[in-house]
Length: 186
Image 1 (tube, rainbow, N blue to C red):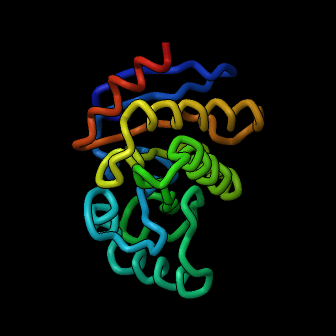
Image 2: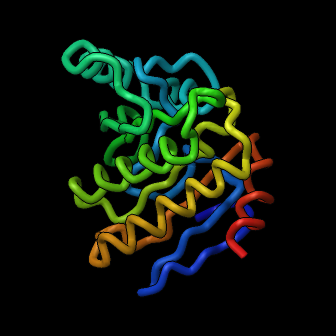
């Protein structure tokens, strides 16, 4: 893990959740999570950066998934290839937009869905950006509560989860989530 450690929450059994300011694409993890929309179109922000770095394979697979399954619902996640990226896959988590209601629950559901996909693939580490805190405008305190809730619930419900390496929130620009994360983790 590279970057500036902002905070750590101990989850027990040698597991921890870390907030780090770093470059998601340079992270050492089995998979990364993309802050996606329901059509898996990567128009801006972290989604565009991931798509650009991964190359056309990621977009092609995302288009195929949407053609076959339809729009991915808020609170859900799907997996694609990582293309040219050095990961085993990219998980696309569809977080809520501010104002659609039940944002914390929907964001926690998207994260838990991402953890399930990682487990199904035998991945031991995933890194994810500050989902819904950017252009989707969900307040940082709501995001922080959802991240902590999802991680804690996942590890309580799955005590033998293969996700044994730190789960890490990464950001390049959305640093406003981290003070809120530290505040709610105390």
